[in-house]
Every structure is written in structure tokens, then in C-alpha cells.
Image (spheres, each protein chain N blue to C red):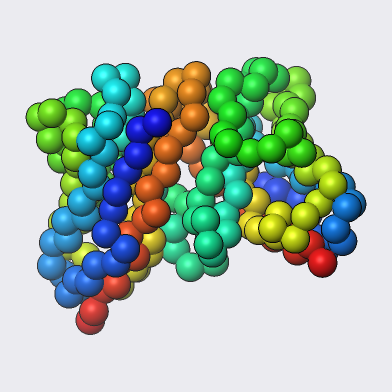
Length: 114
Length: 109
């Protein structure tokens, strides 16, 4: 079974631009979660989608948004990019809701904001 | 919000057991305790999770205190491949999830 895939793997943007990251979960998984990882803040939870509905949301500004499609694929969008948004963005999928289930992480998208 | 506290780093000798502690004194009754680890340049990897009872799997054991205010991840025989950052995480349905800062485990041959 193929693992979680994320595209693109690397991205360079400038301040003020917006970016869309994509995540394809493991086949059959209905939950997709997004995380931001930086050297200073560590691993931080962004949001979780389950069956196209946002179930959980972390403490991030409204510039960070996401959605999930009927095939469980998910996209994350960051608008009006700031230098501090430079990070590794990780996507994870699970069969059921994340509090009781195992998550499988993708390799991440490395975003650099100049 | 519930928080977790972990030591920044720990060191172990190869082939010896390792006990990684996590403090979560503000845990709520329905919060699940999960452990993930992250090897260099990789995404996090699931290790184990539990609610109230101790749990065992092929990778590790999870010992949960009776009052649930702390837990310990036990690697029975550390190998060099176990060198990673270990995260203790509380999952709460319908609410914000909490991550600890992680413990960097170093394994000496």
C-alpha cells in the first residue's frame, strides 16, 4: 500500500504570496491532519479533516486554511506569506479520527519564504 | 489546555532499556496519550498509544501512572536505530491537540 505523499517537496516563495500544498493519504484513510515543524517551535498541529469536515484546529491565524476532497485528498493554503511561515509542513493520515488511531506521516513539504 | 513536559535529551547505551518520561499533570479523562518518534530527515513515526492501561507492542511499552498525570515510554533494548526525537502527545477529540517539546534520545554503541 502506498504511503502518504505530499507535493511539492520543496517550495520557495516571497513574502505576501500565497501557497497551496497537497497531501494524498493512504488509500482508505479518511482523516488527514496538517502540522508545521520549525526549529524554534517544534511540531505544531494545524488542523484535522475527516470526511471533508474540519474536526480540530490548532492555534494558527486565519491565513492558514485547508480543505479535504471527497477522495480524502487534502490541500493546505497559506495566504499573505510571512518570513516566519518558513517551515516543514507535514501531513498525516489515519483510518479513523486521530485521537484514537495511528497516524502515518508523509515526508513533508519544505517551504522557504524569502 | 493540557500540556506535556519531557526532558530535552537523554542518553542510553546500546542493548540497554530506556525509560522516557512524560509529565501531563493537566490531562483530562478522555485524553489519549500517544508517542511518536522522528528520525533525522524523516516524518514522525507512530510508536504506541494508550488511555488508562499499560500497553505493549513490538516496538515499545507504555506505562501510564494510575492518576494518569505521567507516562513512560519503555524501549526494552535500545539500538542505534532508536536514536530519534520522541514526542509525547495528548489527543483530545474536538479540541486542540498538545505536543510536548520532545526528547532527543542518543544511543551510544
